[in-house]
Image (cartoon, rainbow, N blue to C red; front, side, top):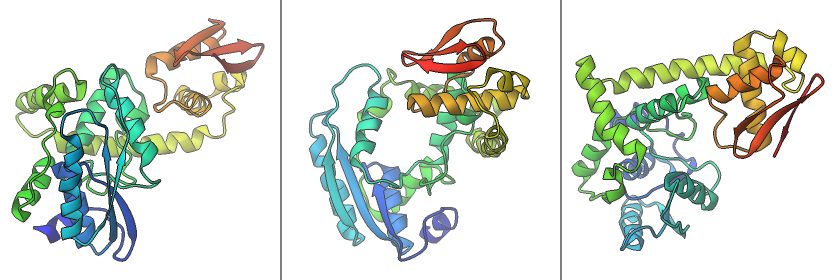
Length: 286
């Protein structure tokens, strides 16, 4: 089973030192196992957000698995308070204590969920390309395969009850939308969505390369550029200057294009930022 799964992973060559984010769930445990079986020198990193009773004990599950596969183990705490935007806040807190370049156990199912979430958010090419495959070596695997691997090896993954909470939009996509789409299509749509994300990633990369020649603060240059390139140049500029996790959505870019065309003097682009125009120059201000 392990050789077949490894053949579809993009784990670094044997002997490479890798850091793996391991929550104790089946996907991240599979990442730990497969990286070790591939001959990498693995350090498993566990982060406890303290969001539920007994969460600190979940580190023991990861520590035991790391010891079994001769991996190093590191535990960190990154407390998060319950409340709005919890998933994003926990992710930011997690990455703040994890080493740069850490590998994660995202699968094709995560990819499909992410693309659908970005689609309903009104994302552009970046969002429709889904999860960047860099540092996600299991992106071609399915969630059921990571569970089967854990079962095959006698591992007992941590069960996170928040993964069943419909208050989180991703859970509704996972448990409601994707099953409905599979039923309507009469086929498994996850590979189809994941494949489309890969194709869109290529389109995004090409647009980025071509858009790099455009000065996004020059309203005349943006107006004269082909619209897809103009929009990409604006996305890159706004995300870079504001430090936002995601590029602005399609609706925000449409509003900015109205400023470019001198149909509006300024517009909001999220996070308290506004794009303004003075003569032929675009600017960002809060």
